[in-house]
Amino acid sequence: MLNPQLTSLIVTTEGLKSIKDILNKLRDETKARYILLVEKSGQMITSVGEESPFSMPLSALIAGAFASTREIAKLLGETEFNVMFQQGKTRNIYISALKTQDLLTVVFDESAMLGIVKLKTKQVTEPLSDEIASMLYKK
Amino acid sequence: MALINYSSREIHCKIVYYGTGLGGKTTNLEYVHKQLSPTIRGEMVSLNTANERTLFFDFLPLDLGSVQGFRTKFSLYTVPGQVEYNASRKLVLNGADGIVFVADSQIEKMQENVESLKNMEENLAEYNMTLDSIPWILQYNKRDLPNAASMDELERAMNSRGVPSYEACAYDGQGVFQTLKAISKEVLNRLT
Image 1 (cartoon, rainbow over the protein chains, first blue to last red):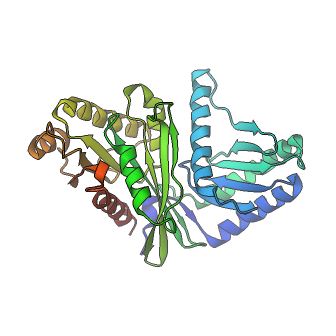
Image 2 (tube, one colour):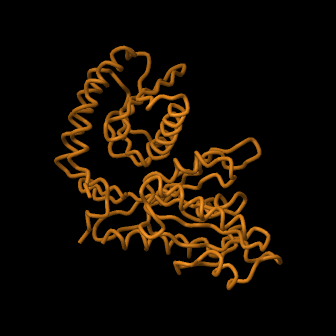
Image 3 (cartoon, rainbow over the protein chains, first blue to last red):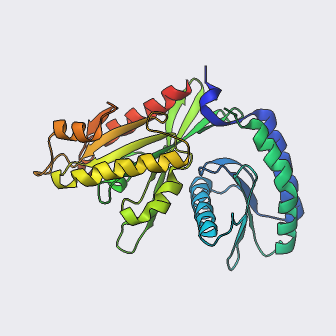
């Protein structure tokens, strides 16, 4: 029998469904290509939208990049930067930290508007954080 | 800090290869990447400096079969070994489920190994972890070099806790899979 006491996050079928519902709604509203939910250690919890063959290395790099900006924030006297935005020619990525320190990552192109992505992402950080927090094992 | 997904029946674990600069951490991952079939391993990602030294981390995802009906997925990471990159080292340790400490067997590297282990302990403390709370093993690399210290000396200097230790020449693959198998077993044992 698996021992949940030594783990930090146990993703249940019901929990995952609630999370995916939130992410799918966010994707519809923002017209994002896909959305990744990345655990702070760099592992992907789930994704919606287009399947990326690179979701695993992408998750590791996103967690690394975000962790790095968090340290930069500290060196600048900020508690943290809670969002990060990278703009490309055709693809953009918007990363927002949840209360649980996990990362909501929205990948979008020119058919989406940055303002909407920002607004809608902000609106779901609270319910998403609550969903994840309810699956976290507390010692 | 494993992630157990009951929906997809997968267990995700993170293993970090830690140790001094030029000790062979990246070489371990490169050998694993080279030897395993692309069906069970993903692409290796390396964040390097211009001269091929690890700047932030290397990352290699692996699928290591099933345990109790769950597929086990391991993410292998290395840290940059050079002293000045401690901030990056600390970040990579976040959420680690197990650590392989790669010690350079060369006698003149003994002090560096000891200091790196101490540094690892300090960085773990930042995440409220200790060498007793996380599964970790030792790999004595570069055993083939003529200036390699004896196993007795290395064990005395590095292994006061008596964790499992393995001899290796990561360059030609000796001991690489033995080490990986040992740490994955230690990590999974903690979960069952």
